[in-house]
Picture (spheres, rainbow, N blue to C red):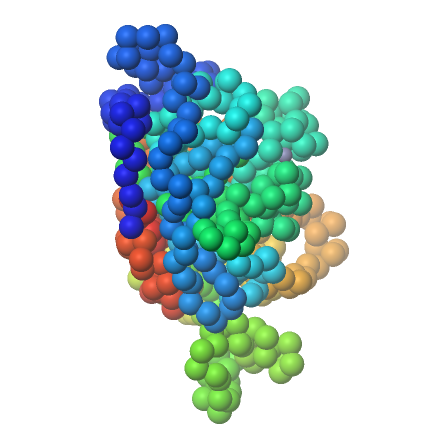
Length: 494
Ligand SMILES: [Zn+2]
Ligand SMILES: [Zn+2]
């Protein structure tokens, strides 16, 4: 479905992208300096990167539009999106298929519609917004290969500019503009979307950058350069799955060498005590007529509000394969954690967890996860426990699994309004820290993640288990919802 630009300048720029890798901020450079050198020499001129703004090219593109729950995604023609100041137009190469999109599509997390979901992208820079900062244009010249973080910091709000004392790039993960405009209203930071249907001009909202389209507009602070040694498809997972796990382990948990870490919910979790409930839950399901077009889990979670009790156990046991927890294991290992404990209900997933760095695996269908974690850690509990499912029961398990003074880190999103309970006296007396974590800090973390991927710290190839064509977006989310994607699914939009 993708179409090609025929501009000579662009083809030259693309050639440059193939020849040179990008320097990253980890090395103290803010620019793709190798590419800039090529621009100035190969053209025999002193043309700067800003001279490569695309003024001609296609005037429209295709995008996958989500209209409403239980309606299939449709492919629509859009006017070519136009970036504004300090925004970049990216020709999307790949976009990961993530549970957060699914939460929106299932109506579990409110979001304006129609919208384009997809927030885990790689692609090629094709245009800068007018009046963009020259440093941004120099850092991402047209033709650069980039990866985008799902939290796209504005760079100027209280949190983005705060905490320069603590970290030179602020707390990008709390960017006020991102939450107030993008997550709340589906727009970028001037309060407007960049997506309009061709012909009617109807606005279409953006979940992050709206990655499931042939082109997307990304605030430049949400991007980093992708070296040519890393493939577009597999590297897409750096922008959410790996980014989320890194935020949890580096900032929330601050894992140190020798720490013990438990990750609860590699692919769905429960415990022996839930099994009777599971049986009852199944019996109830058999006796209840569920509309064929309604997702089972959504139905059960909603029903739970009315029925309560046993159905919850079924929801808990539901297997949803998530890649973020697997990334947590890899990052814990990279940080030098000693005991790395994976908790799950499926042997297959536990075996996979061992391949990704777990030193112990607990099947919580067969064993009491909290008791077993205590047994492994000499009765104390772990330094850090991560909860990846967003369920009230696993929230409690996570808190109970940490030792005195330990950190219980929550990364699993769930139905809007869900509550988790905690024993207040235990929390107070034992100095338990319950910490929420949404993602990493784009400007400081994403370049580090690219470096770690280059070194092979993350096995990106193994993380991506399924590739889809652009036309197969609907099938990709169906597969994700059914739990049939073992690692991460990525849509290739070339
Ligand atoms: Zn995601
Ligand atoms: Zn901000």
